[in-house]
Length: 343
Image (cartoon, rainbow, N blue to C red):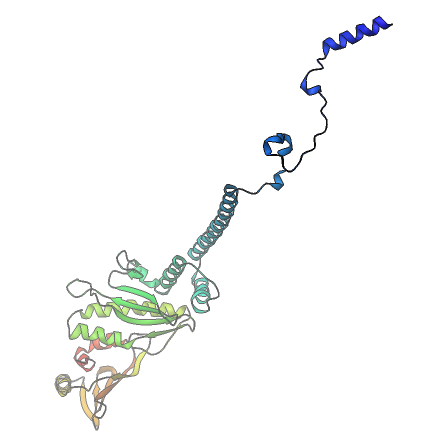
């Protein structure tokens, strides 16, 4: 029994080296504060991750990631706004006049909706096209040389938004020698809020002066301009716009007063007198102090009244039952044009 036990111990000793460090049992060491770090085992120096301070590189990483996150949100917001603007511009392309009018009021007049500058420009383009649509028959197209300008075969119409949210149309027409006059003549103001249009009589008087006095335009050009713009006026009335009496509209007889900022020169009155006396269909007579009546064919009349104190004069135009614009009227009686010339 004893021999067998000894044999088992020998076998155990041959399998296990009791001198291996891993199997040596050490007594529990007591560490003292005064011991240096070199005296402390590496295992005892380990600390948890929570106890470690965050490095500068880690702070930079989180700061950069937060900034990138905010930049990404900003890019997404910009992309969403751009997409919404593109959809709105597509909607404008598909809109009829009534819808465009509604958007015009919401964006420009009431400011209930916002739009990009590009979308506002597109809205003005489509809206003004609807206003002057009859000029399609005369080669209407956007100008490639002038900003916010429509071109036709015979004249150009520029448009701009005024501070009162109205649309101001100005025109330029080629001179009699084929050159385009650089000076724009303000023609009319369109007020979509009140659905009203004001035609500036000074534009008509300027046309007459440039034609018969300056010889910049021909009477044929003036007549053509009057016809085409009266097609536009008739169209705008169908859209629901109202017009005050003006010198361009030929939809009804002329029966209005024109106030002039000058007195009619005596030599002008003398020339009118001579012309009427040479034509049996006309007459010229004095009807009051500083008042004169020019009687024309078809019961049409022009009354001239001078104001010596204010150094002004007024014209009372009456075409009886004949529908005419002032351009058409004076085109038939060019000897009366000097009445409107202020120079």
